[in-house]
Amino acid sequence: MTAMFWPVVIFMAISLAIGLYTYTQVRGSSKRYTVCGKSMPFLVVGTALAAQAIDGNATLGNTSLTFSTGFWAGAAIPIGLAASLLIVGRFLAGPLNKMDLLTLPEYFYRRYGRTAELLASLLTILCFIVVVAGNLSAVAWILSVVSGYGYGECLLAGTAVILLYTVAGGLYAAIWTDFFQIHVAIIGFVAAAVFLLWTRGWAPIMTALPAATMDLSQLTTRAGGGLANWANIISLAFGNAMALDFMERVFSAKSPETAKRACYYAAGWTVVIGMCASLVGLAAISTVGKLDDPRMVLPVFASGTLPYWIAVMVFVGVLGASMSTANGAMLVISVVMARNLWQRWSTRPVTDSTMLFLSRALALPTAIAACWIAYVRPEPGILLVVAFDIVFAGCVIPLFFGVYWARATQAGALASILTGTIARGICYFVVPGEWAGLDTLLPPVLSAAAFLAGSLLSAPSTVENNEELLCDTP
Image (cartoon, rainbow, N blue to C red; front, side):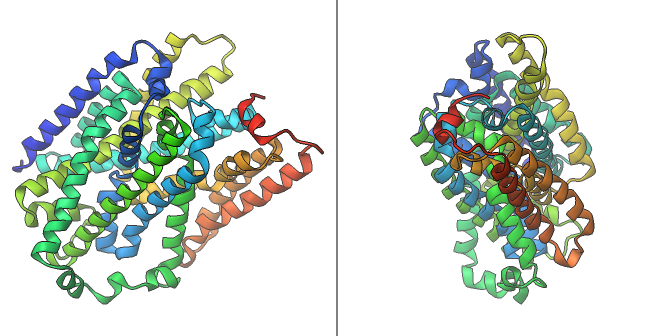
């Protein structure tokens, strides 16, 4: 047990208390549980979006990749996530908020029909269970370091706390705890970066690095990892447009303009905190030395190098960032299972009270599945990229074209989803290691081709205004 144990315990207790209190805000309404009654103002939505982007992958995973592979490998995560927020803000936040949606797969139902909704639901559920797993892994590593208990025990404890307040308050719990947790992370990482620059200086930190660490060949040459790094950035930038947790916050904004501005605000904080985490990874290269497990670089560096109060804020910041994303993703997975699978395919009417019960109950199998993945593959940074590869391959093309192209059809959407997903599975096995990244970038191209062909072949000679298509149900 370390000196940081009690601050971390207190932080988790406060988060749990806030989350449990939000039970009072749900008031027995499944819509309030899911999107907070669509009433959230700019600062609340922007902060909640930042909390979803600044997670264990963008902090702990980013630092470990920077330390072990190079600056651009780690920085690819926050760069990709920030780019995604800008893209969503510019192209999707306004139109989708205007549709008064409760979940993202509901968009696929309105635009393309029930089968497309089913496929989108299954793929996003799979994707986001992996996202939850990556963040539960980060929570467990932090708890293990500060407590001295094993990773498995800490994983169970962290999962239980997050599950409890997720079930209690739904999106209210996510947003209220986000507001508390993300500001701790912001203060901690900014303070750590300022301390390192003040005490060491930028030039000495850079001088102590191996030449390859900052080399642009990581972006410009295949041998230097350029193909893989660009694939990660592009996958996060566009694949994250299918992020269930991002979109729940977009839907909760009180107006389309509020949703758009909140995305831009969150993008700015994502870059700032991501670069601070990367700086910690760079400084650790000359300080920590060789580690058998690069995932431990942030905990080891913070506890051994930073002043106590800054180290506590960094520890707690990673913990809070990871808890906020795990909480938000766990919530939307259960809601999608309840609304877009159970309700849509049920032969009996589902009342609002039943929907609320299902949304809460289905969080349990979600938590169990994510906890198991986090146990067998505790790799926060890699898990995030893998997750968004899945939806990038099959779902992104129908999402964007459906909003902006009136001739998009159900046949095109189904062809796109199936082609992209199957191609991603094939590429996983046939693309050689030296061409890593091509397996991410090629499937969306094939998905786009299938979408265009399917839509053009099946589109009627005349089509309605696209805004009418988005508002009507099939």
